[in-house]
Image (cartoon, helix red, strand yellow):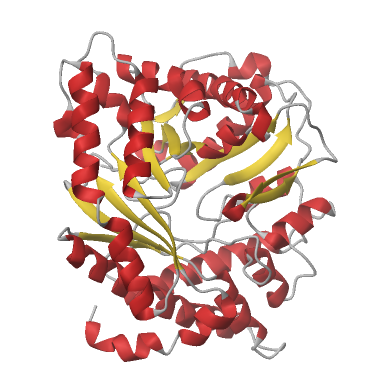
Length: 455
């Protein structure tokens, strides 16, 4: 990118002032592989010291850039190497203790979240993977800033159904251990298919094995900007005009994000990684992906045509962004988290948006079933079926999909949860009650599709 375009970038000030444009996150991706030791205490010490060394100025420099450019940077985050490998060489490694060390380091450098309490198990488990996964409920209930993710399927490997069933139980237990906060722990836990290793967004951010020692990844946002641009179009504008309008806005948003990301990376003396183009909504009025659907002409999110509208939006955002940056990565598209989008919350409360419609929409969005509150008595088998369905969509379509559902303890359909902040609030949605038990307990792997053999 030619940074001589700064003056043009700063013309987007109205987007910031009026339409909620922000840098949703700057995320330091940090490899901790050289922290491994046969001594557990040495691992904890190495991990803490390395995070402090690299991230001690992350928040300060980000705040300085925020003041210099008057562009809000909402979150500062860290993403580490999948933590399951850190204890592989130790005989009696305590992953809950590791989570506490990570939590303390995150607090000491002042970031909002630290991601990477993760395992990649699409083809099977190592002893470290198993130990980390089994520690997740305790780790998330005893810490504040830890986010956890598990990749359990891919288009190359198929779906690890043993991992799917195990993770369904982990989600239930995590929600149970944080029942006093309406299952908040489960809001920091996500299951993936085809997980990217450079995603700056939580709860799925981690530093992939192919990533450098350290890098700075940026997640931009701007549903409100896109919505305003679409609203300004004449009602008779055709889909080509609609798509071109969205592409132009995505170009400006991406250029702004890369400017901030590159400057922050230079200040930290680390490489710039990627810009994630995802339109990440917030509960704020006017900052909604569902609002874009209404601007396009749908009465509300959930109407017939919503999936087509989302497909076009996702594609236009990617095309506009890729022209603005040579380093686009992460998830890049449109998020549809129910609790974090005021329009989606309204649609779900009014019954316009059902669980099944959300699943259909995930076939064309950038992630999957995200931040959906479900009844606390939902069975492990039903949750496993939900994860398997979403993984199948990702596996067959060669795209990233994810499941972040919250079985809210002691609450049911018709009630709601309020988490506040970016996590917002959500009505508890109905899920199917037909049994999946025999199917999800078969075990083994669902084989990868034939198009996986494309060498």
